[in-house]
Amino acid sequence: MLQEVANNGFRWIDIAKPGRDDLEQLVPQFSFHELNIEACLSKIQIPKIDRYDDHVFVILHFPIVERERIPKSSQLAAFMGSNYLVTVHQGDLKPVADIFQKCAQDEKARMDLMGKSAGYIFHSIVDALTDDLLNLVRKIVGNIDDIEDVVFDEKIDAAKEISYLRREITSLRRITVPLRRTLTELASRDIPHFSEEDLALYFDDVNDHIDKAIATLDESKETIEIYKDTDFMHGADKSNKILAVLTIIFTLSMPVTILSSLYGMNVDIPMIGEQGSMQFLGRYTTFIVIVIGSALAAMAMVFYFRRLHWI
Image 1: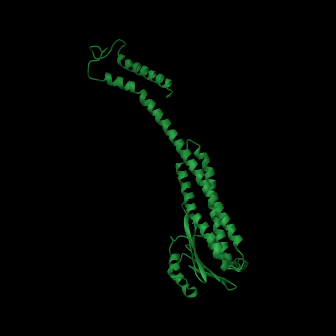
Image 2: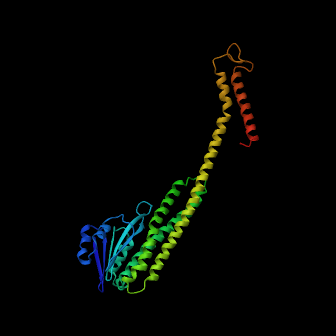
Image 3: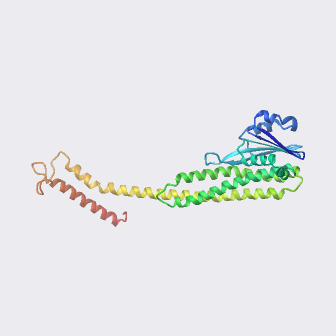
């Protein structure tokens, strides 16, 4: 959908969810290159800057979060000339739509944002998108703080939550690092040609925010790796304890298994009378002998294991 707002000869054209017809309307007016038109229609272009005599074409990626909590990359393409700015996106970058609506509906905001240059309005857009990026980073930091108690609680399995956080951090770093590189190059080489004022400090502020986001993500990555190792160690220790208990139970049950198997054999066994069972302790003599023999053997094993410090 193509929308346009103008102020004192400066035009801002915003195209959300672009179709080929929307973009081809602009070609006669601005002589955009066909390759740039194709890049706007594609959702998988890498960040880049293409320079021409009268304008510059730039592609940037910013993170968005939809129903899933994992950040996804959304593309913002922009044609920047001396008296116009054309932005193309998929409609999921809310700050772009909010700024455009503000300029379209509020004359004062239109004068403030569009009364200077293409570089100035482009900075306002990028700055708002960077604020969204910082909010996502702060949310991840808060989730890491919340998961600390879970990691050190041996009764709770934090593996799934840790995996989600690691994926969030990786996804954001994959978007943020190229963004920093592309914006630095754009601000130093291209923005001065399309702005009447010096915007170096403005873009330095944006780049500073992105640097802080990258540094925070790097710290979060190290922290979540520590938590992952801690959770793994706790899980391994818990499994070892369970296996140790099961091993002890199995080992201590060996005497009764052996004795019961022995007395269940269909062969002559010492201490068994002619009637097929022992009688000196009454009717249940065989059972009593098996229980006592098994208990004595198990106690001997426990004593021996304790001497070896196995239990």
